[in-house]
Image (cartoon, rainbow over all chains, first blue to last red; front, top):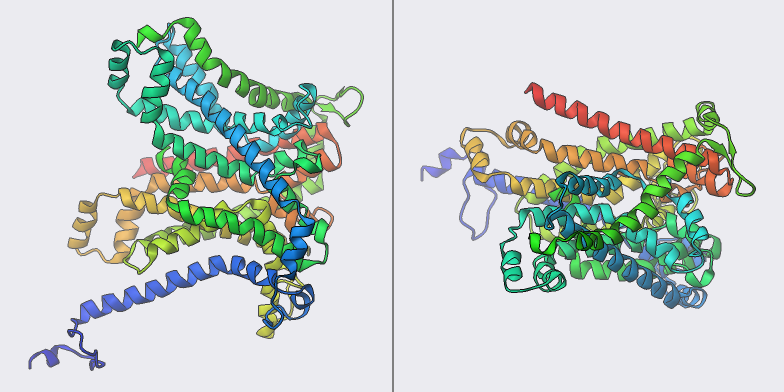
Length: 300
Length: 290
């Protein structure tokens, strides 16, 4: 056979498979090496999470002395953590604040975005000026707002209520919401809406039964992005909430170190109990969540 | 659309967002600017001090330390994340078994609250109980003070930031790679471009906008780093490991020097905007020359 001449390296018995050309084989070997690198990087990324979960099953003494021993794994930390954490409370608070703030922010942004792209202003300049005004908010970092919003909440009598967090969370979502919604509507022809108007639809019916359904994908993105933001937000919550009954999840996590001091097992079990639900939700909706969180960068 | 555009209707649609935004964003920014020109400790009336707070920043060694730390985090993160996340996007674009799952796993840390990210990494980086030093001890390497010492904390914070951002940056690059026209890629492959040449001369130039977006987002996010430091070291020892925002938070809310804190907030905002603008100018000028 003439094939043997072409091959400089003696072929390792490749089993029943068709013998590959050297180029193909090299390609396959490269791909295997690349896959190994990809798996290794992914493993390194999830390693810290695995570590926390492992520690959460270990007695605190083992965490200090011999964290790799697997002899005494148990649920003691979880019992301890469930007893000392207001789990239900902090999730209920966070959900309440998230739902209220994200609904409010989305509704007002939707109304504004509709006005800014579909309604006819007598002065067109004014229309683009208002849009620019909202978009300028994208350049405002949250930390410059912390103290003024605290004072504002006090002055408005909001401090000590959920409104203290709901209103600023809704407000800081307006620039991003406006960016995505006006961008979407500007690209979307207004013909369907015009037809609906000719059919006699008023402003409300037009918005609710015509425009809203059209905007479903962009609204889904906005909801996901903002819910993740509110869920993970810490600086505002740390300043605007001082009632222990109103702690959010992030706020509770920030107190783990003080609360458990050297009870590392309890701390890890608590961290795991916050982490796992989040990761499970992420596992179910990862495609939408990833799209939602990167939409500003990918589309903008 | 004239039909539905009476002036009261326009007002009605715009008013809620306008009021909410003005009250909770515009007004607070103005308030911060005004308070940055005063001395205010939370009681009594703020005393007008002109630019004194800004002059004080110039001689505040803790501010400069925080600035240096933030700069270290910025440089290390960008140096690792830009090439790293781009390479990872290229890698996961190949036909690797389970690359979809790998993408989701690598993105995972981006959805974890920063405060929890900090707590997780305490158990990796802590000099006594952390995984890292345990692993090093197994290799016979003496303990390293990753956090809480005098020098290494900003580098450790950079590592944590890289961990939580690499999937995010990779996803943006990945989305960018999907938009590249396949005929161009095929044509360059037919012209005999090897993998690396193709990346260097076709992919990277065509993704310039994506590189700019990722860089700007990372710069903005580095300037916002706060929770990580808050949990890892609390800024200590003696403010050695503060970032700009964590120091501003300390001055404002722990020390209750509201006027000075607002001056810091204003300066940090301006610095962040300047770095982003500077990067944009540099990258667009480079683009023109080609």
